[in-house]
Amino acid sequence: MEDPVALIAWVVAFVLVTVTVTGLVGRIGFSAPVALVAVGGAISYIPGIPAITVDPDLILYGILPPLLFAAAIRSSIVDIRARRDSILLLSVGLVAFTVVTVGFATWLLFPVVTLAAAFAFAAVVAPTDAVAVSAIAGKVGLPRQVVTILEGESLLNDATALVALNTSIAAIVSIVNPVSIPLDFALAVGVGLGVGLGAAWVISSVRRRLHSPVLDTSLVLIVPFAIFLVAQSLRGSGVIAVVAAGLYMSFVSPTVASAEARVATRLNWRTIQFLLENAVFLFIGLNLSGIVAGAVRTGPGLWPTVLIVAGIMSALIASRFLWTMTVTAIYRWGPPRLRERSWSWGNGLAVSSASVRGVVTLAAVFLLPAETPAREYLQFLAFVVVVLSLLGGLALPAIIRALHLPPPNSLQERTELKNLLAEARRAGVRRLDEVVTPDDEPRVVELLRTDAAFLGDTLDGFEPEEQWKQFQSQQRLRRQMLAAQRATVVQARREGRYQEPAVVSALKAIDAEETSLRAHEPGEND
Image 1 (cartoon, helix red, strand yellow):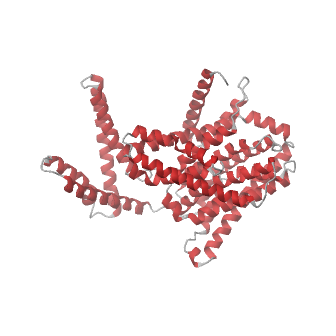
Image 2 (tube, rainbow, N blue to C red; image 1 turned 45 degrees about the vertical axis):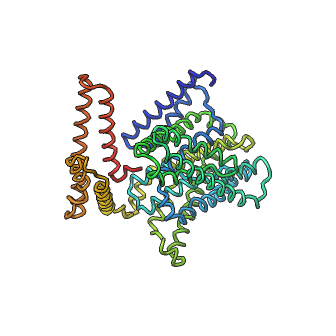
Image 3 (cartoon, rainbow, N blue to C red; image 1 turned 90 degrees about the vertical axis):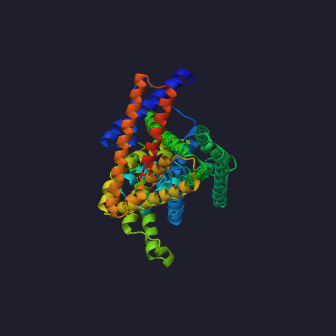
């Protein structure tokens, strides 16, 4: 599409359709990815709609890095380190097991493809989707241990899958020495970690010296692309580099960036993640007619395809179940060191059931080279796997509820939040006493001291549940006050009683306090 006006029109239409469909299906609680694929597929069959194609490198270098970075900065490196052994067993061991199992199953069911091509396809469908897993985990109230494992797995398994995909692609176009596979994997991991952590440290040092939130957020916007490019050029894993950088920068952000920059960064990356994540599903739907035509042209027919899809889905489900439950058994019955870190059979079943595929699978399948046997048919199979896994994910909340897993202890978390806030506010009062001078207005100092001490002192003496009610009451009343303040400023602007700089500053001050209130609530800090 060479006409720049037409290109801009397509981008605008793309965003409008994505936002509209996602907003509508969100009101009825339906899966937005499934709806976007369906809408895109329907559009692809409208006469006159041009075929949409994209360079695989654009997906690899333009879409995957920001998606991975957005997921990483919302994750906790502390939680991941605490469950690193379990996460590595799933993100590396399970992916490798899935590649072998599904690869052989695909080759046996569809012998037209070579074993290397079957392994490449298996690497494409092996990783679970980080965003889908996080969304499901947030809805059903899983135990924190399970949430950490699922999110850590889905964040890191992309690297293993893409390394396996690169090795399989190399085997398709040339001869691969089996001895080089573990060496290549170690090189990819080592270089990726080195580049990601090193670059993140340098960027964080620069952010400490930036006093402009605009400059700060602008710098962070280019981070995943730059790090991915450097890591890939050094034969490392760009995926690992981006994830490592995101986790590190998220961890040190409170000490290197301003509150405004942090708020802007979170909002920016949530928006980018939303647009890219959902736009990819719409894009794949728009390719449906071409994918189906290619599958009809290169595939074995309808009923053999049904058998192949059933076999592949069975292999995917069985491999995840066998590996996860075997790991669960090892932790429960293994050495004492492992038994101390074990989880219940119910938790193991919950992890086994969370096998939704998503954007990485849809993006990676386009990386298959033209030399791949039955390439278009394999793309169709990956498309079907993603759709079926998304449909299966709709039943996951019901499955997890049937397991009767203990939900997170909300009262304990709220009490810890209150105590931490009280401690922080007492520290603020101590600093106030240290920096106050005789020239400071006593009334201002007293107001600051009273406000800072409210949660720490006024709520003491109540039971934990009553403390939280008082905290909620304070939050609710302050929100109402802020709403009235904002309405008054807007009305003053309409009446022209103040100049615009004063109005803008007042609105910014109100917005800043409301942002602070939101940050004090559980679930609002991601």
